[in-house]
Amino acid sequence: MPSTGTTGGPRYWWGEAPQTFQGALNADTDLVTVTIGGNDVGLIPVMIRCSLTPTVPCEDPDMPLRIQERAAQLYRTYSAIAAKAPNARIIVLGYPRLFNPSRLCLGAAGIDPWEAEWLNDMGDLLNLEISDAVGRVRSLEGRNIVFVDPNPRFEGHRVCEDDPYLRGATTSGGVASNASYHPTFLGHAAYAALVEENM
Image (tube, rainbow, N blue to C red):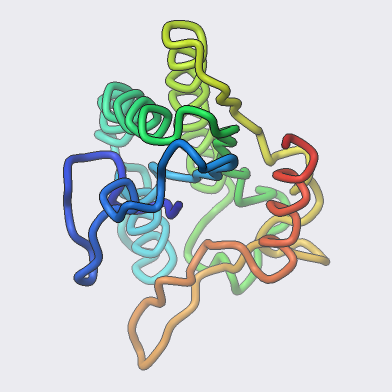
């Protein structure tokens, strides 16, 4: 399940209903993997703005509150998934820290070390809220759901490092690409390995 558009009600993105409304989840479902929240709180747009308009301050003072306000929606989303797939193992994957503040490059153009650390901190805060929501679904509802922190797997593979698992800021046709600050092929393979380890 994607990182966009699943924390609210039946919102539609590019004409597609949230996956919890598409009928794919049922009592026969035995595995669900989920990564949600990053786009919903606006982390990617903030990072793209930081990269493409370096004269604009990067920090968004409202970001911590937006992340904390998502906690209830995250809980409802995981609870709804578990209710529709009551026999599934649900693996909720968190977000890696994107930057090594001492190793910035063209892929992180416009982002200085202090801003890189702030963006990493916002990812950590989002992971905390995700982990807490997962824990509440597991303890209050008895569901087979776990949170997996990807950071150990992505250590040494951040944007601008020698073997990155994450894309930096990218453009397509002169505009920011949706692939910006998302995993590369190797990053997806790292996520897949985490899923296999936690099945």
